[in-house]
Image (tube, rainbow, N blue to C red):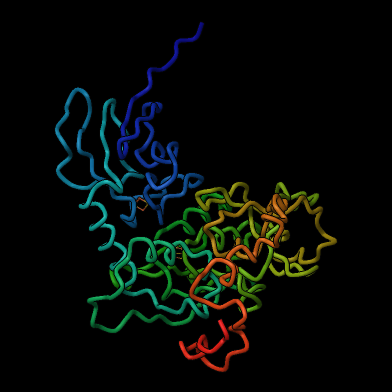
Length: 362
Ligand code: SF4
Ligand code: FES
C-alpha cells in the first residue's frame, strides 16, 4: 500500500482546511472559496512563475505554524507563500490587510486611466472589480499620468500601455505557450512598458491568449474592439474540430451573430484551455461551431444581466383570497371606518380633504 503524504492544516479567516505540503496560502484559500479567497491580479495557476508582482493578494499570518507559532512580522503575498502545518491566516478578518489592499488598489490606479466607458474590458475587468470592492473613492495623486507612444502589435491585438498594470501574465503566456517570445517588459520603474522588441508583430498561432490573460484592457481583440459592450452579448460554450487546439471555446453572440470568440474561463477568471488564433479571430460564424449551450457566468457579474438561465416561473398557489382577487385584499373601503365607501377616492380632483367626506348623508 502506498504511503499517504501527511496533510497540513491551515486556518484562513477561522475556516480550517487540509492541504498538501507546498500549497500556497492563495490556493488553500481557493479550496475554501468565497470571500476568504484573496484577489489575484498577477498570479495565474496555468502560468509557471506567475505571481508576486501586484501585491493584491496580501494576507496576515497571525500564527506561523504549530512548531513556531510566532506571527509573521509583515503582510505576505499569499500567491508566493506556502502553508505550514497549523498556520493561521487572516484575510478579510484583518483590518491591516483591508487597509493595505486599499493602498495597493490606489497604487495600481495611479497611472491607470479611468476610461472604462470606452474600454472593451469594462464589465469583465479585474481591476474594475477590485477597485469596486477594495478601492477608495478618491486619489491623492496630483501629478500627470504616464503616457506612451502608441505601439502596433499586428492585425489582431491592440495594446493600450496606459492601462497595463505590469502583471507579466502576457509575457509568461508568450514565453510558455508559443516558445517564440517576442515581447517583454522594457525599461524599469515608471518607464517600464510591455513592448515587442524591434516593433515585431506577435503572429504566433497561440499568441491571441495574451488577450484572455490580461486582467485589464491593455491587450484587446482588434476584431471585437468597439463592436459591442460585453454585457449586451450572450456567452455560449461551443466546440469545433480544430487541428491546432482543443477547439473548446466561448462565443459571445448577439442574435445569430458571433461578435467575439474567447477561451472558456473558470471561476477564478483563468483560461481552462488555450485556444489558437484561427479559432479566436477567424471562426466568426455560428456555422463554424457546434453550440453546447449557455455559459455559466457568476450571477454577480454584469454579464449575467438579462440572462435568466434556469429561472422557473412561480406557480400560482392562491388565486382567490376570501373569495376576492388578492390585490383587493387591502380594499380600504371595507376595512376602514375613516373613509366612506361611497366616496370614490379616484374621482376626487387633487388630494382628498376632510371636506370631501362631509355631507355624504350619513
Ligand atoms: S499587458 Fe496586460 S497581461 Fe501584459 S503585463 Fe500589462 S496588464 Fe499584464
Ligand atoms: S496575485 Fe499575489 S502578488 Fe499578484
